Length: 95
Length: 483
Image 1 (cartoon, rainbow over the protein chains, first blue to last red):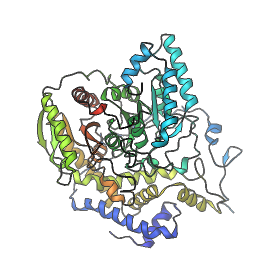
Image 2 (cartoon, chains in turn orange, blue; image 1 turned 90 degrees about the horizontal axis):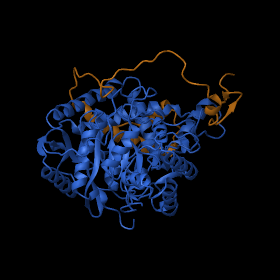
Image 3 (cartoon, helix red, strand yellow; image 1 turned 90 degrees about the vertical axis):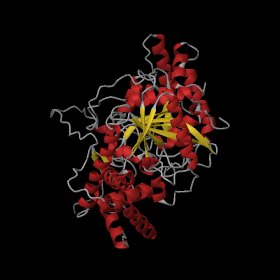
Image 4 (tube, helix red, strand yellow; image 1 turned 135 degrees about the vertical axis):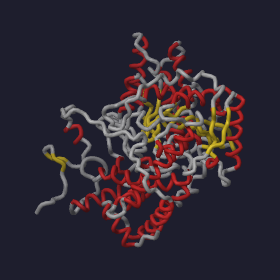
């Protein structure tokens, strides 16, 4: 299945990836190859086959709604690129 | 000392032949002297190792030592280690000092183990050759022009080069078993949910599983005794009793039934690999096993289904790397979107970006049924194949990989060729079953791996089957030239 340049640009935007203009042809080719590979699945009739999300068909375990974590904000923010007054800094989003 | 297994080192420590500090220092010295050839470590943690070794010696003197106290291991750099860089071999996390420990790391610490360092890997565990590492590829100790396999290539190379007696790995599509096969060591991917994923940086959450990489099945059992167990912090951890994985090692194999899937011996399989695997099966027959031809008819669909499920889950998991809370951030972003896009575009390598894009496409509006849902349906067919065969046989055997270790650069420009190297390992992750790779021969001086697949939670059986083979053969004792 062949993707074109516009498809790749759209996918990269959805994935929030800045890709170099010069790399687009190669991404177009390899992503198309990968889609050809995965499209082998389409030849199989899977009518009435229940999709399997967990190999043991386990269901989501629930826990009591109580606080178990201690406050480790300072430690967690210690690895952040930019922090001020306990807040993560990002470029201005609201004018 | 470097030729001793974990079990032998444990006796040496117990008998007072050497202290953990002496053992640890010897390994650290060896890593600093030799690892430039293999690039198997990203970070060597001398200070932590020596302080853990000292504590281990003190525990032994105080009479509180357990079976793992003072034994050195290396951790794959995908497991978070509090206060130590945890890079996942990515530029994205080159500056990331983990603020907490993975459960697996906590368990080794609680068992009194010594951490030598963090091993090299494919970036975010995406790869089969270690070539996607931001820190350069690790090299195969059997031939340094060859890849060690991946993604846990640094762990495999470190164990094969005697730069660690054992190491942890993770396996999403073969990332423990394939490098174990290519480097001539023993690796075990446990049943999905057996080993906690908490603090193990996520690639494809429904497939990822941590496990041991060691020289022998006995050592893998000792490692798994430390690693396994229910963890409330991992929502898919299984509430399953943890046996002593060494308990069944010595059981005889008389009456064992081995299934050989015809799909695991295709016409284009390397003849040398086919021969070594057939010889291993003959050895099992000599040990009293019966062999039966079986069929896993959906084998060829495993790679297509995997290359939807794994990238889809990866695209979701890796969305957390946004340049805001941790990891790489681009210089001078002009707005929030620019911050996201350039931090991710500059921080992730090409293979990671490829997989994020495949996953993003598969999950994008209008394609869900054709891709992700379809892949999950195929996944059930693959599981059903295994379940029906494992009703008839105790274990399934075949080659771990279709080829021995390949040359650096040989497949790195062809993603599809690289993906096909995992043809025999990937189906197990989709099915969630446990599997091992044990050394079973050599071809042109490169190791060949035998894959052994068992039923859910049958790790004891796998370890028993592997250990009995290792009592009868010496492939696992072979050492690369010059080591």
